[in-house]
Image 1 (cartoon, rainbow, N blue to C red):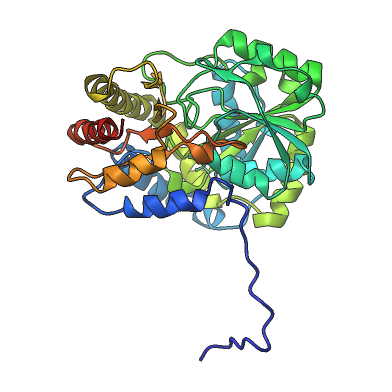
Image 2 (cartoon, protein in one colour):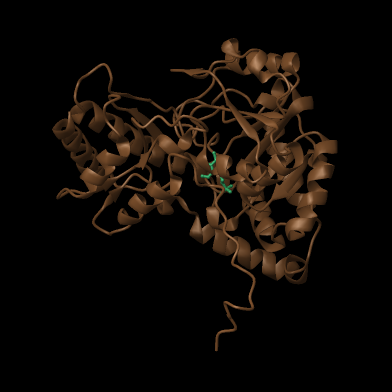
Length: 403
Ligand SMILES: Cc1ncc(COP(=O)(O)O)c(C=O)c1O
């Protein structure tokens, strides 16, 4: 029996922070159509399931339960399990930024880190600097704190710190994905990273570096973390989602201890701590050196998909100056620019109605302000290569019919 009595119950609250003038929900409606099994979908941001080390994780689970069963099932410290913090700090140190375990705070996915940071740094109306375009999940998380977004200047090489000026003064933080950015796949050069750090000092803002894709480089390691250039004002957010398993919901941030202490207090109120068992399994997997064998396999897999999609774009897209796409050196995304007369949401609807239905994410929701409607984000990692070719051809043919 339902307890709901419209006369006596208070009204159901509504919630709409993700809704933007350009309509994220409209895109979600279209993408719901893309869930049909026959659709070749470049829409998701999911890692390739064949990259999950299922057997190794099963062994690690067994080991954890055998050797420290009760501890692994118990509540634990909000900062995270000491052995995992130690391992993550060591990894960061090996990558060129000396880090101690007490500079690492575990989070429940890096998405929780975005939420925590926005709550800590922002009040209603606070200025927050974002790339243009930027990760749409970050915009949603930040919007809960109702900040005022300022879009930063970008060019073909990504964020252009040389063009950053007075508009940055007074900002609470800049949200930056320097490596294999979502949605563009672009990577900031070492010089730009250094200059960004100088700008942060000059205009006195924090940097929130989001780096979920940094480990998935194809041929060459990307430049070092922004923490290398101004550790006193960078909080670096990382995750196991793209290198191990997103279902673990295991992220972490690395930053100054006083920021971590404030964050820990907030996280305690939210969820007490990140799952103990998952942390111990992850520590075991890292300790066993899994990444040494596992990551090269994932990198090779993603590289082959990226190359296949780049070739298909070259082969099938109309040859025009106003159609171009990024050439990522790692990560999961290609960002396609179309002529300004084309609305990518219309293109999506049309491609979904063809005999070879294909899907992507229209670019508009990735912009904090004025949406640019002539962009598409293409994710290539979960689609087999022969389907990548068919899907890109279908998108290109539909586009030609619209031009
Ligand atoms: C740029 C970026 N940041 C954060 C996240 C959230 O990742 P998770 O919460 O799984 O760690 C994602 C997920 O796709 C992402 O692309």
